Length: 361
Image (cartoon, rainbow, N blue to C red):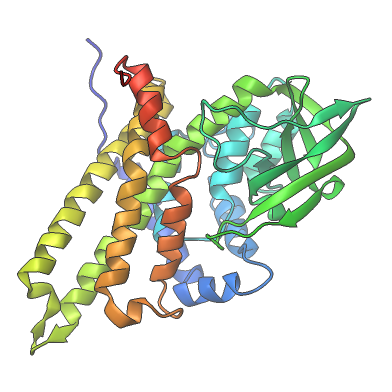
């Protein structure tokens, strides 16, 4: 029998967490994020430069011989946990994970992969954020070497330098973002805006086959999204506990009321279980062991827990939680948006049933 995976954090992973958290504490405060999403430039490109260039985190999943750091999905998961805790408006999931994984599945595009790994360019896979790893995805038309068509719901397209576009000939093409018309769409989560991408005769470089590249990218995105959702849930739990220790009614801390203790205990259990599922998904992506099952389990569980944690945080913060100035609304919106990103929990449960041969009658 194969050895069971060790899902505990290593010393190196804890050191990485501390470094990322310190950076986010200094450069990604809640008031700044709220102010940014009220502007026309929600992405924090200065923070992205610090993460990608200063710390080298954009290239964690890229082998050293191809210009990256040669780390694994476990390390990337730790980064995403911390980005989730800060609802950081940076294109890490879309560029450093999804677009990077798509390029890793292609024969061509080595120079582009190295540029994404260094943070010199930002990539976005032009597939709707709602698309599950096993679902069909929209393509554009290839005509005379040029690309024509419209793709919707593309996350972080507004800040991308290059778009990875699937075409109807079965290929995945790299298209310069300035060769496309990118139109913002209404997004619930203003820290990860969506856009419509329209191509009208845009030139593209064929990178490889779209099918396996997109499936690999979406699977990694779904698996590591669970770590971002863990970060959201962990922040919600931690901040709610802290607030209820300080908030007083009848001259005693609100957190001492038994009914609230029960709700917090339930939320703690759910968060601990989510941590195990998210860590297992990251480890499976890193080792290639039962990856499809691990990702489906993590995503089937992550969405309802993250949403529940954010909803409880909003309710238990009382009146202050309903204000725009308090950041809890950012976490609720991120949790709700993440609940349909890369497939809903229901879609992943259906996929899991097929994988383990326990489909409903």
